[in-house]
Length: 99
Image 1 (cartoon, rainbow, N blue to C red):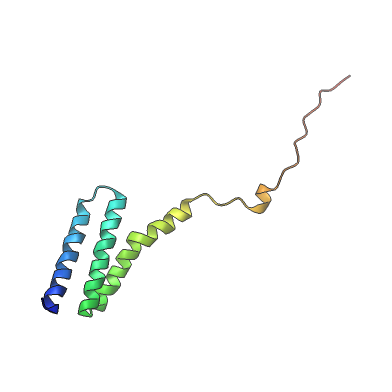
Image 2: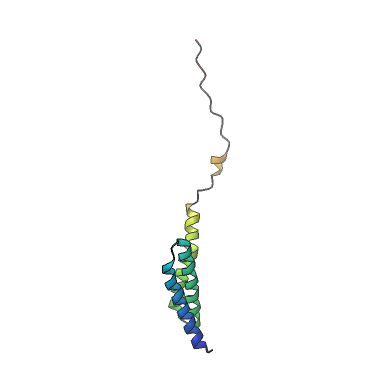
């Protein structure tokens, strides 16, 4: 098999994988399939020497893999600051008035 056919096969495989992402029902599956397709496109871009294909699919792979992790980390509750976790003095209860 010659190099040209391998490049073409890689490009068509990437196309099919990207098109298949539209059939995904869940966010996780969609992002996983798009990440795989982007990696295939990056391989195709390297094989053909196409910087625009490489750059655009690095961006797609980033958005599919890294960006959700960043969003998830940002949505986690903040760790309590040191002064918030320090023990507090007990509250004084109001004593009943004696007359």
